[in-house]
Length: 414
Ligand SMILES: [Ca+2]
Picture: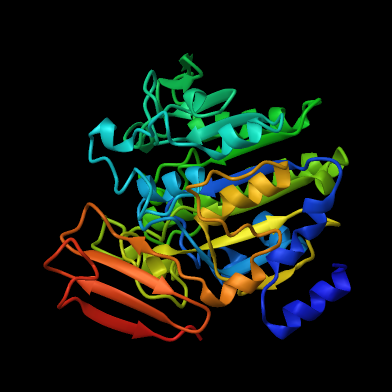
């Protein structure tokens, strides 16, 4: 499929990434894979998704040069199950991690038998590294990154640990890394990522760069371009500064790829793990309303309405991935089979097999994604959607969203 053919498909409004990444998939050389994940970033928090106040010039450029998805869904409305879905390719219905741990590490610990992206593509000779927030298994337990296929890990092993941007230590492989007093952990991650991609690799690599930004607490090292926005609430300035700082770091990363001539052989994907959180300084939704963080969508983090689970996704590989926007319905569970296809290995049997490279177009019409809201809520919800419609169930009295009596809310896809 050439790019002209692709263009016609896009114009038909049918699908696109599937064939879009066909060029990547058919190459002789295995492509390097960088997956960048933000935490609690709203669908409307980036300029390329309509944000008016927060400056994200580098991600906007990435979007202009790459493919911007408008119907991409996180693996869940909260961190734990969403990230588990991303790493294993298993939706919440079949995946092991159903909700956030609530302080119980056993509930955020992938088992030995759970197979991650890193484990699979390492079979194809990939080097693997994770920098940032993991949250799928603490050190010395089965779910820890170095026991789940990553050669290298520096970051937070648990959710709770990741809520401190100025920790004294970070996990580093099987040991600890000492940080200087007042050192911002995300500067460490950004520098590690820069060093990693600038290095000469004799094998293809997979880098998973998982920011805690813009998850609370809001306390970046400085207010950046928002220092003079004195009419804004303090937390709004801090929130915006966190995102703009991350944007700047991602810009540096992409620049390294550009200047070293590696951009065309590196597929970079940027996304977020769930919808925007409410701000607790001035009551629910304050931040979301100030920035219109969920854009045109209903709901925030923990909701299975669109605003809780629809997230930005940008795919960037200049010269290979055609620039454009796609309304292709996709989700976190698609990343495992997509990467497996790029790496030339078979995805795990238990994963949802909707690779974005090819083969999936015919199945798009029958596509459903099921997302449950679990934990932190007395309600249980599910979203089911296909190409032409969507239904959202809210069941306040039962843990079974499809139980008799569950209220159904129907929404149009348009
Ligand atoms: Ca999150």
